[in-house]
Image 1 (tube, helix red, strand yellow):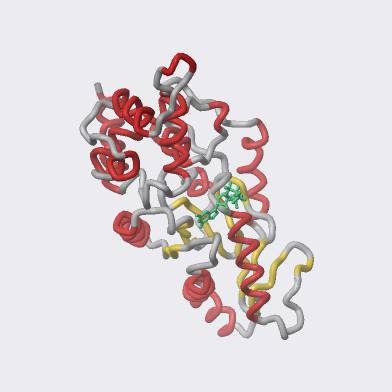
Image 2: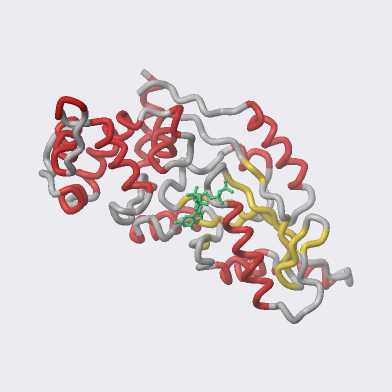
Length: 294
Ligand code: G4P
């Protein structure tokens, strides 16, 4: 697969902008895509801060529940609380405030012991583009305001959103640059996190087909009524045939078949699928280490 370049210039500045905003907050809410928790993670965040952090596995409604549980365990083992959310529906939101309160318990107790005036916990949401930051903030604000509508002060002022008397959210999310390694790039591209015109949908479909055949056996058969054990190229042919995707001269239109497959994946028509597991990441890390030794 050719190199994918989707690193716009303004992204380089975004890490610096986040560093500035980090000074304003006590807590970071790191938003990841539950279908690709590692590919949607920006490792630079770990380098620029060690502030308390909650991991949100967003788009949990699109991911495979079994794999999501594994990812939850993976991050919790690193001492990071995890909340599964569906930002479109607001599912899991009450657990965010709860997790924040737990994380800040010691800090608040210390402040109290020193007789300091209590200040609400301030948090900031960070994540790569398309992971769902704006959807989450908008929905979170609406939900919180709806719940506490009869109380004064639950309005946007300055750049803080007052979620409740103990918790405030910075209303501008921190946008982290997207990862650039090959595997992450492919998974981000398949999930739709990066702009389509820089990608070759055909090549993405050629990567996705064997993955589906191996991990989600039966999905291709039930969606397109085709054989499961074909090569990726033959699978595209079979999809085109089954869905009557023809081009001029009545030959099968492979490009449209590839587009259909990727579009079906992105729109949940292939069912809930996770593109990487903690074991995959571990294996890939080992492979890279071994290759660098050779
Ligand atoms: P960003 O601010 O981090 O860049 O992401 P944004 O909120 O714009 O979300 C990117 C896309 O992901 C949007 O879809 C949004 O609806 C979708 N999305 C966000 N959170 C969830 C979730 O928990 N579950 C599901 N299923 N989808 C989610 P879009 O098609 O690009 O835009 P739109 O047509 O929905 O507005």
